[in-house]
Length: 475
Image 1 (cartoon, rainbow, N blue to C red):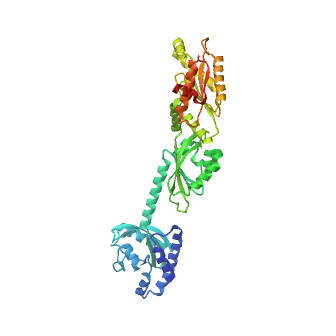
Image 2 (tube, one colour):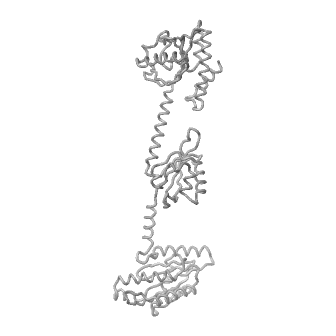
């Protein structure tokens, strides 16, 4: 029996029993009580010796007779109730406990004797020292004489108040978390490392169109939401379980049940492990589809000419800077630039009106799109002035492109209400120099060649070969 008591002492030295040891612990208590029944039979004449043994048990232990009067009680029970055994001895304790509790005690004792079997249950017991009720888990076993008449109740009771409060607080915390996730305006899901989705927000279903019951596992979610990218997404999700802190996953494209693609900003963070030891993640996605659309529109407004839908001057200069950097990086690489100006455009405005002038500008923009390569960048840089970057072309090749544009424009006059408006363009051509300090410097070289073309009769192409034109104007 001493080994059982040592086991009890060892277990109860901890603040709380692990869940998985609870049933085992109660079984040991039952075994202990059965052995103590035998001890009570043999040591009935020596109560003091029996009480000394019981005081070794660090669990509240007491014995009642058939009339619910206290026959034995150990020190652990005195401490748990805040009452002395000397006060309770040979009494039914009716003056120490609230009337409603005494009534319940008597009724339970009688029922156990009549039922003739051990019972275990939760009950509320008043603690005189703390002046408050405590929640206890009680085990009672009836004993009978040779004739089957009731003799004693052997009882063990554990104070589980703190545990109940802790469980209640945990349950309340879990309830609050579940409600927070369920009613979050963002798509959220809590998922475990075994792949099971534990809970998800209503917003997830509303945004994606997938019913929550259709998403039992993260694998199913990846299949539905990421399509052909499901395998790579599963691998990324598995890696997230190694997180120690919040991780910003960035943007991700989600496929909804209707086939629509939505852009989410995703974050994941680890949560405390589940009671069964599984690691858990909370992942949330903010739908930024409309934000990205507006962002794209604002970028277009900032970088695109509203009339012609060509890049504007700011965007053109940025592209030109990139091209110069590419030339500096690649070394043996050439690029050229065209500066174009529609001839006598003011006359068109004065004769036909500004609306017609705008249509002429759009007509020329369309013509350039049809006659340039996809890698070329054509832009409207102001008024009737346009510019083109020709990656990979030397001066002679760029000249051919410029002449082709002039010819195409001559052959494609602008037609308005059966009126044919002939249009011509003057072009300056220059090669880019890796030594150009900035895009404006490269643009100036082609602009000087354009100026020469305008002064030489218009509707022509002039070259700024080896910076000679720039040098000429600088002189």
